[in-house]
Image 1 (cartoon, rainbow, N blue to C red):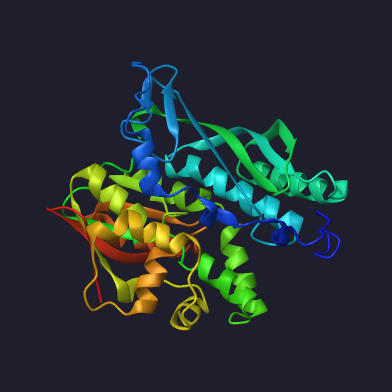
Image 2: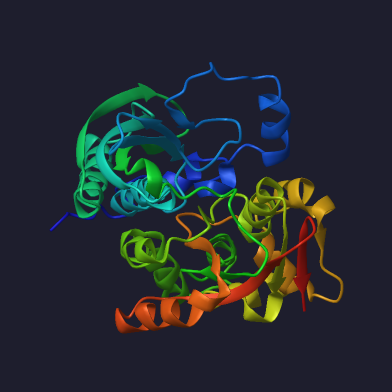
Length: 349
């Protein structure tokens, strides 16, 4: 078992960070602007790159194998270093699962103040290594620099069959939409800091943030979903808009069907918003219609998620069988909407 370093011994990791978890992501709107002029080198075997961008890059080795490559890192969102390492690793590994692949090898990306006890860094690395092994891969090294603000994550290489890649650009009219995890990690973490969310609610959020999307992806593969993405820093509406825009469709979501972590809606109702909320509204808001949706549910839909679940688009006639398979394996699944002709995202009350 991993030794968990006491938060006091960890010298309060979150106190050293400006913003933690996926809420620290660069604005999606600014990223779009930044990458407009960045054209990748033409390469026949680059199956997924920046045109359009997805959850990871995919490079074909031969007719049977392709490499999935991604990286993700962020400042701490919890004080416990082992939990921080496990959450950060889960978040990075899940990008490979979102592409339909399986992790193979990972490298640490780390930045820590030199004054932190080495036991703190050791706990982060050990927890991440354990999570990589749980995902079926190996943590094989990495790079660590000195920085006043702690940051940790992984560069991950995985494999996928070239015909089995899940892109976020394949949603089709008539599809049903599903989520494989509840929403609200950012709200619960923010609420806990303001004494609006209790220890049990925080523990439940952490349980989900340390749950790999491996089991959900295993169930999905035989169903050949049209589009898949993981819901992380851009929130449900940000990632739904990306899927709608790149697929040339309209996504219709039901606010009342959105699954929420315990306490998340109550925190939002109290007026708490995370740092990622305004950036996600700037990015997706002009393309979202949400007439009549209560403010707290709109906040839940814009909330930046860390290590969130998969947003899945697949033919509606496969929906009952998919739901049955998830129930049989005791896995979470919520039907949250549908795909239709048009553009943008509609969030219904």
